[in-house]
Length: 280
Figure 1: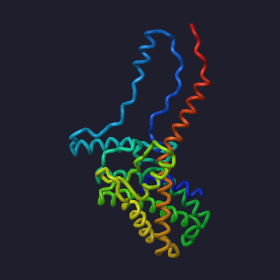
Figure 2 (figure 1 turned 90 degrees about the vertical axis):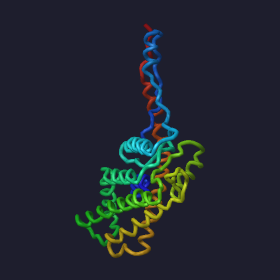
Figure 3 (figure 1 turned 90 degrees about the horizontal axis):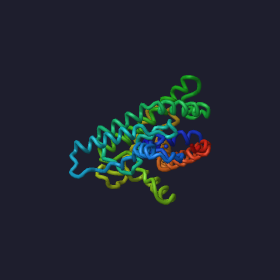
Figure 4 (figure 1 turned 180 degrees about the horizontal axis):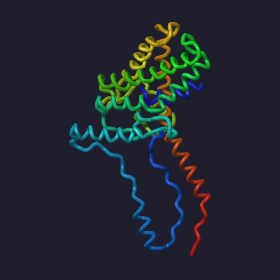
């Protein structure tokens, strides 16, 4: 599935949003003991609302609207401010999305500028390593590699995140655990390669992900050179995309922890540099 594939492909090539979580609290400087000033400061500190839960007797229209609002928030998620993380549900719970919303998520991910940049980087690496030698070298060889890399991304995204999840009533998103022992979270993340949330909220065998990767790899035979076609190259590409998705799931699970740790550390450094308050 996409969330993982996009983030992981860059790591594999160099051998896959930040997620929008609340900023870690930064230490506050003491305020002078002025009742008016204290009351004003307290009034300005509005606590964040708790995560939305499904209301009782929710109608299909209300559920669709709630899913649309959650998707809109997810579409602002990026890792390191660059890598799209649109398919991650960081709260671990979300309203089921409709087939139309699944196709919207596919389109949003496929036309993101990061996708085009990633395809260019992968093509440059392939050119330097002379991978898929049937493409040859030069500008034409680079453009062929670029098109193949971008086509692979779109193919896998289309089948694994839109078509099959719509037909099989499966949710293509990654539902982050976000708490618990480290090893438990690692095993949970890796397991999402072969299991996923159904639209009914229950865990299911992840047919969409595994089959979508193989379908995308099979379609790529139409544009790869003769030496890179056939059963073995198809299986190799399908397994490679699945592996990349597993790495991407781990990134989606643990990146928010790294981000929050950095924010706390950065906030503590800023507080340490701040001048001490002076008493009147």
